[in-house]
Every structure is written in C-alpha cells, then in structure tokens.
Length: 351
Image (cartoon, rainbow, N blue to C red; front, side):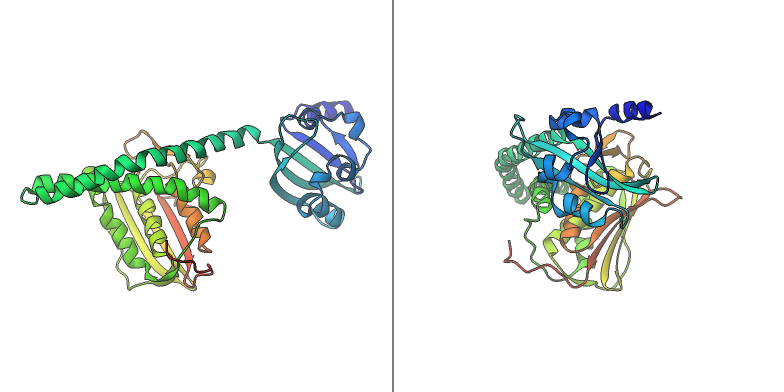
C-alpha cells in the first residue's frame, strides 16, 4: 500500500511536500524534485523551511505553518518567485498550503504548481497590448477627427449624418477598448488613480445607454433603463460611466433585450444589467471576469469577452465594491456591480 501511495504521489502533475508538525519533510515527490532541483534523499527527514525553503519562510507560508499547525486547519495560497543559485531562471510557482491528520497527528501539505509558462504568456500579452495601444492611437485619432469634420459637412443629409454618427461611435468604442488595455494593468497592480466626487449613477447609466444607440440600430436590440430617482454616490464618474458602458456592450453582444437598474441598497449603489440571452455556460461562470475569456455570442459565433468584464470587476473593487454574475433558472444573465455610496478611496488630482 505504501509503495502504491508513493507512486501515486510521484505521478501527480504538481509538486507535493508533506511536513510533520515540526516542519520536517516526510513526503517529497518526483515532480518537486525536478522543479526545485533537489534530491528526495536530501530533503526527507530535514527541516524543510530552515534548510531547503528558507525563501518560503514568510508569514503566509513558513510562519503561517509554524504558528497554526496542530491548532487549526491550514489553508493559504499565493504566487511566488524564487531565485535559485543552481537554476538558470527564477522559479515561479503557485503554492497552496493545507493540512490533514493521520493517526491523530497533524501534518501540513504544500502543493507547488509551476506557473512560469503562464507568467511568460501573460507578459507577452501585456507587452503586445501596450504596443498595439501605442501604434493604434495616432491613426484612430486621425479617423475620429476626420469623422467630426465630415459630420458637419453632411448635416443636410439625414442618412449620411446617421452613418457618420455610427462611425464616430465605433471609433470611440475602439478608443475605449484601448484605454481598457492600459487601465486593466494599472488596476491589477493598484496603481490606477481614482478621483471620487458626488455624481448621479442613474444618470451615468442613462448616458452609457445613449452611447450604445449605434450598436442597437445595427442589431435591433433594445436597452431599457428602469425608472428611478437620482442615485448619488461618491465615485469616479468617468470610471463608473465606463463600467456601465462595458456592461451594456457585453449584454448587447449576447441578447436582444437588456434591462438596466440602478438603485440604492443600504450603504451601496447597485447597478444590475440583465439580458435575455442564452446565459453563461456553467464551466465559464467561475472565470467570466478573467482576461481574454470567451463565450457564446448572440448570433451563435464565438465572442471574445476581451478585457471589458475584467475592467468592470477591477474598477468596482478599486472603489471598494465588487462585480458578480447571477444566472437565473429562467435563463439569461445578470451582471451586478455594487459600489459604496461613500468612497473609501483616497482622493487624487483629476486625470
């Protein structure tokens, strides 16, 4: 049985280290040997944190383990980058700490998942995004300025004026997507500046719907804002407007009818955007706010969520709120953003 368990642990696709209550390694599988460049024979029976993984000896891992093992169940996780003198590149891993009991004795379990490839792909995406933003901004500005000039030249032709208005709306939408690329990176590193002031969130939602008129004309979709009194909150109005724009735009890609509700709920403002689309597949729901996820489009093709929903959640959290997804049993999807009425965010100069 022991041999079977050893082979089972050795064939897991992640690094596994089991520790006794003193922090001594009792299990060290082959994957972890390869990832860390250490032989099992040199690790088992020794103090893992003190001798082999002193770089893990931080409150989240080493200190957390020593303080709580045997006293309470352990559960913590995080991403770490560890430089090793005998490895060509730093090791990048996601570490999960948990605990279990065996024959009445407490043990800790470290699960090490290599994320170097994920990090490299993410870095490539961010670099490419920054390059695209830099290269596209200038021609996009020229297009927008030309359309503005053309709009004044065709003011007597209703069809031409409407076509130019649609083209302007599309160019402005592209500009918003480019800004999302840059701002998402800043939000993820807590470097995004917010300028809270007292604004009417209900009016911001109405403005976002008005900006989506061009999309609605071409798709024959409808968006309704439920009646309501002004809903005042201390938020960054420009950012909340973009939250509303992204939510409406996402709903219009997947549905024929969209309903937007803005209301005060105790100490929060709640923005709810409900659509009558096919809903979100169960396997996609836990990842819907992640970058570059995809879902089914309204006309059956694959639609890239891109960064719109990622920006929505990160921007809501930057305000001290959050964004969530609800999937009612009757179908469709409801995206809900909650924002505190009184901003906990430190004021910064306007952008």
